[in-house]
Image (tube, rainbow, N blue to C red):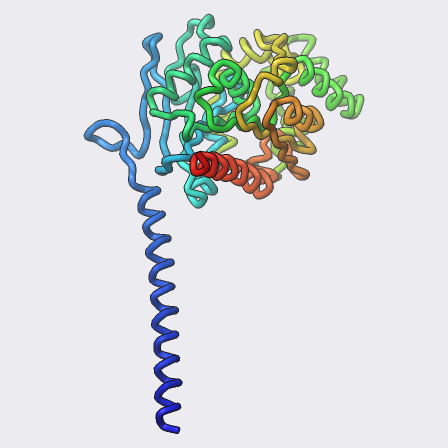
Length: 350
């Protein structure tokens, strides 16, 4: 009986030791992964919290900030506007690190943290595509790790970049941007037509005078359009407010037009709908129920590209990364990791 008791005691001790070792091993693995993710430096002797001012061939510099270290998953974030800032995309800071995804916030030329030349001829699609390519080269991103995530105008820029340089991409994420500005204008007009007639009359009073910056007009647009279709949160997050505060209005109007309701900039005839079939890179399109873009068009785009998926945010708007955050982030992270796993599996099979 004593021998049996000793045997049972020994088994319990061994089991406890094994469990303890397993926990230590799991903790060590977790700590190693975390340490690896944080193990990076930007060029130069002085470290600046991941920030680099990247020189462009035109002689200007653009602002970027790196987060994390992942050899196979690196995401460049393209903000909207045009001429908004990276700030409203700071939401990714709360999700990508936990998923061990390296990512880069980036202010395009003309935006608040980058140089803001007055020469309007610089603000065109072809030059912005070339700018993104210069940024990619400077950051050392390539087809084994490089994802682009573009929201709104950033989604337009992402599509243009992919159509020219998809051989450099591992994955493409088009967030809340249709592939046709005329289609956007039609859907936008539909949303406006659903407003109460007296509100439309009030908007037209200011629009007929081209008085788009009048505080009363801005308040009407904010309360009746932005809070329904841009970001539906009752209190807008500080990063979103900062981004709006820092918009380069001159560049925005030159490219987009003076108002969401009056598209009249150089982008007004942009249309790549018929070119989507050329995209072979793994592509995720993101649509949202209350978006300024038609979610059905976003779904159709995922079917027009050759290797597409669709993510629908049932509670989201144009900034679904904020107002349908968990659905948005879970879907985007899953796409990035699925593409990474598929590429790794393909290499193993070779």
